[in-house]
Every structure is written in C-alpha cells, then in structure tokens.
Image (cartoon, rainbow, N blue to C red; front, side, top):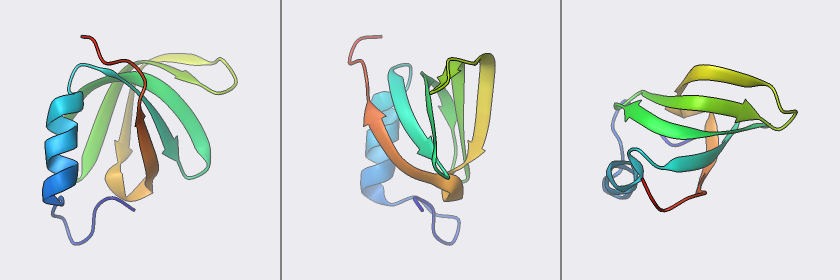
Length: 78
C-alpha cells in the first residue's frame, strides 16, 4: 500500500525518518502490531519489541511496505 514501484513517497520517507526509534501501531494485511521502529528502507520496515492485538510478543517484525495498510504514531518520545 505504501510502496509503489520500489520508491517511497517524499511524505512517507519524511515521516519514517521522524518516526525512527518511536513506538508505532501498524496494520499489516488486517493484523495490528505495536512496536518501536528500528529500521526501514524503500521496501521493508523493521519493528522491535513487537506486540500483536492478541497480546503475543516478539523481538522483531520485518514486513514489506507493500503489506502495510496504515501507520499510527503511538508515542512521540524516544
């Protein structure tokens, strides 16, 4: 959804740079995850200390930006 043709929009790139290190809520193909943005590139996002809507936890989640439906900034402090 966020990535078309392997390039990020200027707005998405600007926001991801701002979100780096902050807690996000991300919808991925209908599933919802919360975690800290660790890294990203033109194709992928990497979240750390991840929790899904059911309470399951994990150390990291790597997801293709093409599978991301929306992103919410959950916490604005690093």
